[in-house]
Image (spheres, helix red, strand yellow):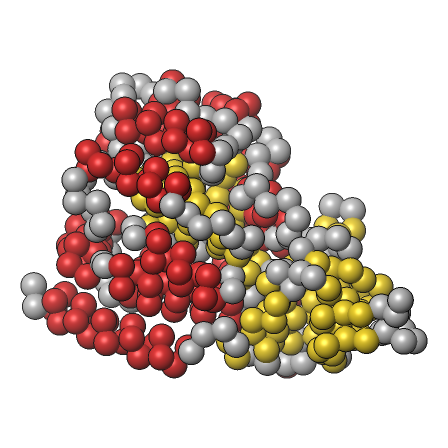
Length: 439
Ligand SMILES: [Zn+2]
């Protein structure tokens, strides 16, 4: 039988694993039934056919980026209040705006905006945590992205769960009612050890274990979090460990303020970590000890966090910040090489989320990949994949394929009406601005 491909990408350069890092290899890529079925030097070959042929000249094919921590719907609050201390920002701007404006409708449209922004900047998988996650799931489904969706658990009234006594019931119902999907899966997102009681944390962890879904939690984001928790001398990590919560199902987000002993606990329990360097920088939270965690073989993924504290969802920029932050913080330029950060944003990020068959371009893997247009002055010349970290930006992404489906072509989203999404979010933003200034 002659070979047939759904999509065939001809004569591009392909980012491939090489030792501890990556290399760029010239070749072609064949995709069929959602998977990579051919990668190599040869072209289409005699008799072979493809529904869609993409000329890859000047393009670099790389795995779709994995954003391990985002609150998609918070695109509505992008730039609403910049350059403020965390508590002022939260209590005077974000929390009041959330209380007033977060609804299922808002989550749907603003998550669609986030999905559009992420797809256009090369992110094919996101781990999102917020409220009204059924609405977020609808947005992601329509976008064509791959996503893990964590319904937030907090011990105070939040949008969609007015009675905190119902928060465990709400997350259980969210998971039980989640429609089967090859691209989307539900999760538990316990907000933090200082917004959830010990009892709530234990119950939320039990739900995640029983339902076999990931358990996300913000952990050790700011200095002095242990004072907010009020568990005596225990650090936030030691506190969670004392509650028997930590195991490989836990994905701990931020992990900025960790002692050596905390890192040993996370390594021993097999926990996974997500670092969000730009959000930590902007809120002045501190610098996560990423090299020290990697040295302990703790998988560390990369996240943007919400774009209200970033202010974008561009993982290319995040990779750049992540690599440089470790260097300047430790005054060691060899720390956290670009190649290691590329791994964090692809295969290690996928491993963090428990997704085994994305994150690397190899035959048999799911076809989640992007084509980066390197025909611009600032990406010329292209000696090594390091420039994808230090030079490329989300706007350089030309093509995005998720699960074998073309979702962005020549910088245009094919799955959603981006103009309509922006118009909807602008209308909502007008109301937010009026309320914020009217205070
Ligand atoms: Zn967050």
